[in-house]
Each structure stands twice: as C-alpha cells, then as structure tokens.
Picture 1 (tube, rainbow, N blue to C red):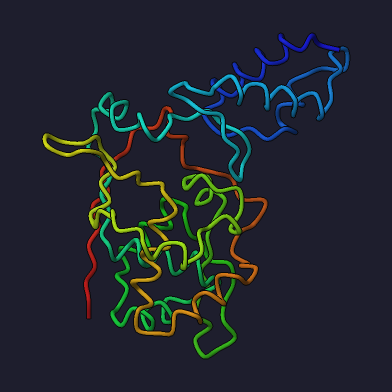
Picture 2 (cartoon, one colour):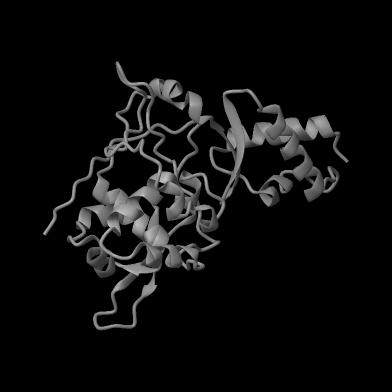
Length: 257
C-alpha cells in the first residue's frame, strides 16, 4: 500500500498535469499491481487535498468528468489578465438558446424558436455545437424528423456541474439582479468593481426565465424537474478547466426573423 502522503502528492501532480478532469477510476489506473491502493484511499486523499485548498486561490472540485483544480471565482478576474487573447463574448440570444436546451431537453430548434418568438440563427447552433455544449441526441417523430438537442458532459464541466440535477431552479434566480447581458469573461476594466463569472449556472436560469417569459413559469419549472435525456455518460469533456484555459474570441449575433 502506498503511503498516504505520497498518494496525495501523486494525485495532486496528476490532476495538475492532466489538463482535463480525472475520474477516480482514471486515477486508480495510474497505479500498478505492486502499488496496491483502493477507491476508498483515493477518495480519502481527494478529500484531504480539497481541505488543503481552504483559504487558497485554487480549489479542487468535482465536475461531470471527474476532479480538477481550478482558480477560485473570487480571484479569477485577476488571474485572467495573464491570458493575452481576447475573452469570449456571447450574445444574450446564444445564452437563451443554450439555457432552453439545458432546461427543456430534448428540444428541437423549432420549439426553441416558438418559445423565444424569434428565429434561431444557424450560427448560434453551430457555435454551441463547436464548443461541444450541445449535441443532437435524437430526432422527433414528426414530419421532417427534426433534430432533438441536448447538453453534453463538456457543458456540465464548463459550468462546474456534476449532473443536470445541480442546475439552479428557476425560482432561485428571481432575486439575482447582477447579470451582465454581454457575459464578459475577462477581468474587470477601469471603474468596474468585479467581472461576471461566465461559467456561473445562475446565468442559465436567468436566461431560461427571460426566454420563457411568454409561457407560464410553472411549465418551465415542471420541465426542469424532469430527468433530462440529453447527457450521455460516454461524452468526453472538451472545455479545458479554468485554471489553464485561455478564452478565444467567439462573438455571436442573432439574425432575428
């Protein structure tokens, strides 16, 4: 059995070197037959590493694909200044489209347009698919067989979620008034007190509420409580963790009909 402190150091180094979240099974696979350890020991080491992060600028969190180190939200705006590329900025239309997929999946493009009352730009759908936040999970049994969209494991990882059950309910968001409609992912500029955290899932709940303002809110609440079918356990995360990823520019706009 590997000594506990050495086990912690190995896991810490592996998580920092991987560049992607690692599951307990992936961590266990690092050890050979003569280096016997167990899932329980790995879980205990992870809990100890999480405790070690208390009061530090980084945290060890669990997302859909496993565990990863990332920059804490309260210092993210300053750390983001080391990235030389322009931060990504997404339109409200894109966020509303993503939110409707997250809360009402599986959903067709036509159903999204019916809820929002405007046509969904092909560019928006393409951008969400290229980011691997949404994917086609099937086709509606209707004329034309329209594609059904659902979220991916990469979507969960980006928004620091382990499962769709962790999405905030729409009722929780009604008093959350500090939303930035431009969703800036960069550090605060001169005169700005703080930057909006782009991977805050509360943004999705706010966008879903706004997009669905024309239909009864209890309908959305009911849909959000159902077990969405859009996430496949076999999906791989493509969004790098916030600790090391630089955000590329991806301005989007909606061509409303």
